[in-house]
Amino acid sequence: MAVPTLLATTTQNETFGGVTYHIEGELVPVLHIELTSVGIYFEHHILLWKDPAVQVELKPMKGALKRVLAGMPVFMTGARGPGRIAFSRDGAGHVFGLHLTPGAAVDVREHQFLAATNNVDFTFTRVRGAANMLLGGTGFFIDTFSCPSQDGILWLHGYGNVFEVELKPGEQIDIEPGGWIYKERTVEMQTIFQRLTTGIFGGAGQIFWNRFTGPGKIALQSMYLHLETGE
Image 1 (tube, one colour):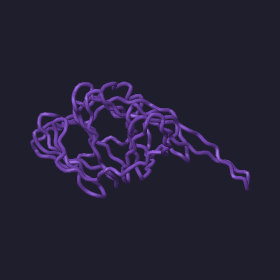
Image 2 (cartoon, rainbow, N blue to C red):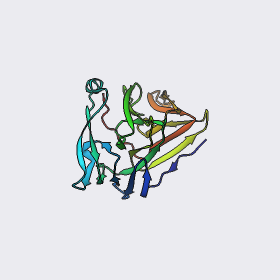
Image 3 (tube, rainbow, N blue to C red):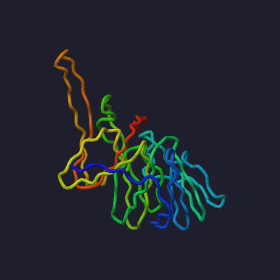
Image 4 (cartoon, rainbow, N blue to C red):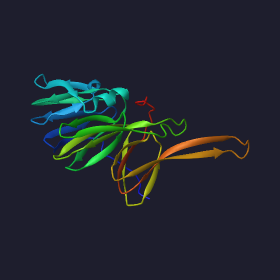
């Protein structure tokens, strides 16, 4: 079985998709982006600082009515350069960037998105299944990010540290439903339910997990934080 490995916790002078970025800080990391002609979008509450020349504006999202009915925000925030801008989430964790080439797409668990370049498209779907291994739940939302025609970058945040594993065709791994961050779209996911019994007292319990089947990459986080879902 493939074993998840720790991703790098810092990045310096990484350039891709028209922007250069840096990730610094061990406990609550900061994503620092140098903007030129390519803009970005992000969740508004994560903005830490910016150059005065950087323009910040609301960015309407596709499928506005569907998002309202799901209790999710209709707008995200956009920024365009030239200039520098930085983001940080209020929580100990690990920030990393995914370099997406034309035709690439990934599924991201809700509450993990940090920012993306404007050439990355976004949509979302509701998945019925476990929200928490021990407590169960009715489901959660998965965000899908894709690059139809140009290179782009997607930045994600994981709680604790982030590990990545690449599954071969047919290879599987079971992950606590709150533990995974993203998967490539070639990776299949199903929710597994297991009833547990204790032989001594005759009691019973149940656990849930998500089973992933390759081929493709998956990232998981070492710290489980049970946030409210988009339900």
